[in-house]
Length: 235
Image (cartoon, rainbow, N blue to C red; front, side):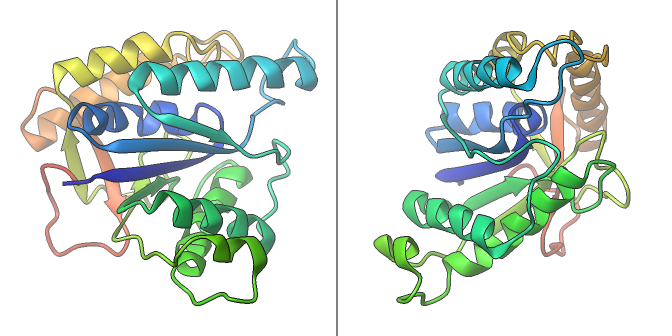
């Protein structure tokens, strides 16, 4: 069973939508969960200034994590300009060493959004760096090296190029309703920024994936590396 999980998104809300139901399920089962946003996603509102929306997004991200029983971390990189560098990967590797997760969830590696692609690459790089001997890399050495056993890519409508599920995680009613109650407090998820009906989409997607997995609802993931088994009950 997963005991500690990190979900790494490019923006506040990315992992809340895609991995949120699974995180809620794992927390209910006794796991520790942390949601990490590499940028606040502050440029995602057509009417609010980035500085104003940044404050709103951070408040929404904190509230979501609290509602499902997870921790929340947001890094101060710029929405739309997330750098794919070793410095950012080292930031993540330090968190991985501190949290000692056995499961890491992030974006799929192909996306219509460059920040999402960078987040996927940064997460893979950070996973690698967290397991290296690094006595000459300063802050990273404050925590013992750590290897992450399970690395998953979440299903996201913006990241669908080449995405093929290799794992289905059943989402029980309690986890689903906890997620719905929490995600409704994020303005973009309600469709108040650009009008996309995120909550309806991901609710329908869970039903669709549940049909394929043999459960009322399920979330789909691509495991990296791909396991021999193509349909699993959960991580």
